[in-house]
Length: 166
Image (cartoon, rainbow, N blue to C red; front, side, top):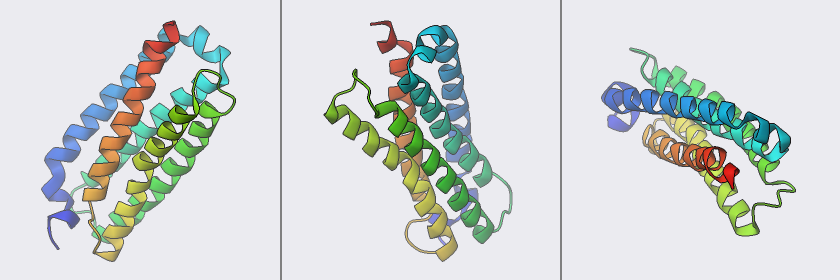
């Protein structure tokens, strides 16, 4: 198996992503605690907060799983697929809640955030299945999902920290 299917070859990447996702999750918690009174008034902001945290949890947990030494490729693949399904279902649900009846978000923004949410979560499922099958890109899918998850969470953090003040 090549690099795409060898988590040990990715240890530097996954170590960095554990730190980055944990740090950004802390930022979300700070943003929510600073603006809690405003956030709880709008269901859409509660949903957006949950979606941001869940996106970052997907990166944190998947990267942590990939750092377990000598974990069997099939076991890792099944774990990532299951984790990806949970993250996908949760972030899609919370994105729907953030967009539904939201007077502050236009149609184009709703589509953008929906697509970004799907791009952030589906690669974890595909990457897990690819590890199980032994073809199709393997851990490169996790790299893509990680980048989109961080972008997704950063957009939400911006709203929760800055846009909420407008």
